Length: 121
Picture (cartoon, rainbow, N blue to C red):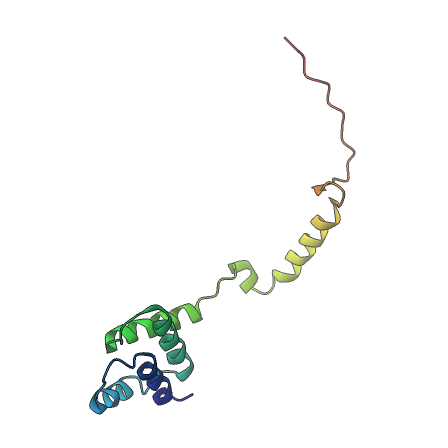
């Protein structure tokens, strides 16, 4: 979807607004360099949340928020490293192998040493 078609969605979402052709032209110029996918997400976010037609700075702020969150990787740093992934998988398998399926607790290789009962005073 092109930026012009994306911006037209604003007109469809807010039909009570009578937007002059010059305003649409200005919006087109201001967002001409924007990534169409990101602009589409910003427009959809705006339409889903706000009750009024956005001003250019409002839509620009929404676009910046979309671009920022798109570039944000929520995975922990050790997963992003790549070299840690295999080692983490190995450790997880090792821990899961020791889990007692009946109780959901983890077993150790060593037998439990019996503890004497607590003394009453």
